[in-house]
Figure 1 (cartoon, rainbow over the protein chains, first blue to last red):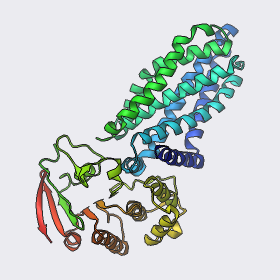
Figure 2 (figure 1 turned 30 degrees about the horizontal axis):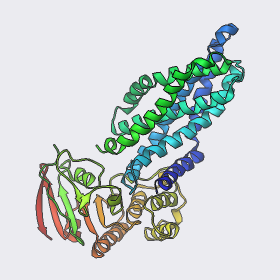
Figure 3 (figure 1 turned 180 degrees about the vertical axis):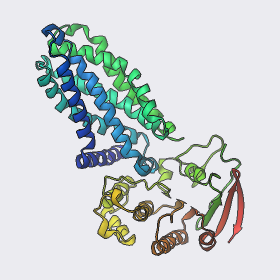
Figure 4 (figure 1 turned 180 degrees about the horizontal axis):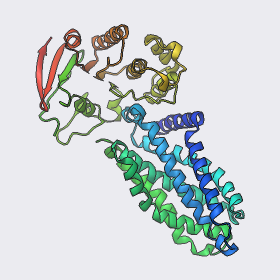
Length: 224
Length: 197
């Protein structure tokens, strides 16, 4: 029953996004333009300096992700749509997990477009350990989206949500950012791969923490 | 504190008209009963138990928000709710309710393109589709034309006659006198029990 409700809620999000494409188009356009701007600013950089660029990728992904979270939240708040899901005879944590799942799927799709654009515009090679890069990308996206979905859901009723969410989201995401940018740097150039255990633990720990904790608290926090 | 010392029981087949001035706490009371807000003190029991997922299946709400998705069609919205409430034969039931609320021809329109009154009809269909035992209605006739107001009144009355309990908020005194089997007034955060109408 839990999985069935999860499927119904996620399919609804996917149906809306595939129809309107607002999240995808706005996030890809915004992040793509940022990549182009970075392209201008790094035109005189040396090859050594360009080596630090893969970590910049995550700044773009976090900003695009935040934009996507806002778009999703707007759809859920339109004429009280989220209240309908909260009133349904389902475990309310399903509402949270469905939002995380659909937000993560959208974000991975955006990354699939953004990463090649990033490589072409900023003259970056293909990651030398692509599988590990993909694993890090998915884990980081899951952790960021779980954290972001939790914060947007909790702040949904607040008039100051557009200020409150980024003020909480970006500082809370710093450990996640440090972990993913260190791992990205290492797997992109296949250097220092043996010293990543702690960073992988942060990445996995973040995803687990912000998937489990909000799931337990969601019921209480959405009742105001 | 918006509401205090609220003791209130809704019997089967009752149609309670909830009245009070703007900001008196009518909407808050309905939201607490629906399990959307948590009381700071005391308990809310619906069908003899706290408002949990299984109890929410028995509650239908029409609030000031339509609770619909603007980027889904009318039919998709109703099907989405029918699936969430595990309605048997969801497609048939949705088609039936589209017919009842006179929206069959607009079933494939995006909900965000509908007028306020049309959206309110979809919202009523959404609430009644799972055949709830308790209906919580916050100004359910808002935006409806005279014809559909009469129609909605008849649905709510027939739900009460079939054994559901109905609480509705309306600022129209005549409508409350016409529909309610009991009137309850909230004044200054306190619930004043009314008599039979």
